[in-house]
Amino acid sequence: MTAEKMWHIFHMHGLQAQQAGADTGKQIIVGIVDNAIQVDHPDIAGKILAQKDLANKDDDARPPYVGGFWDHGTHIAGSVAAINNNGIGIGAIAPNSVKLVVAKTSIDDSDGRSIATLIE
Image (cartoon, rainbow, N blue to C red; front, side, top):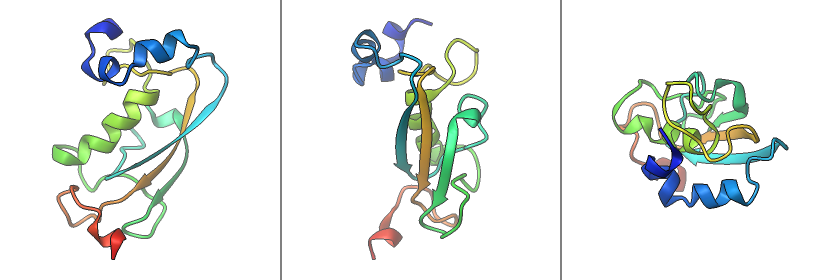
């Protein structure tokens, strides 16, 4: 599937970013702060430099289960850094350049929609 047909790439101006040289192969470190990130997902597993769970106060940014709203952070990480054209997941803006530092913000016994515990 071409980037023009991928909603997330189009709405994030991903084609313009690619044309401007966002995917040069030079390492870019991007921070993703979201509900959770499936750091062992095959599209991004080799791209995680560091992870932190801010809500549960440990070093495991993975969701308690895969599915539902818990997939949001993984989708965002994939939109930036996933491996393109491998038949898994989605395509990314800069698959050859980006490494990720990720932080989980939702407690495991929640539905993955809240960061209220971090604000207290």
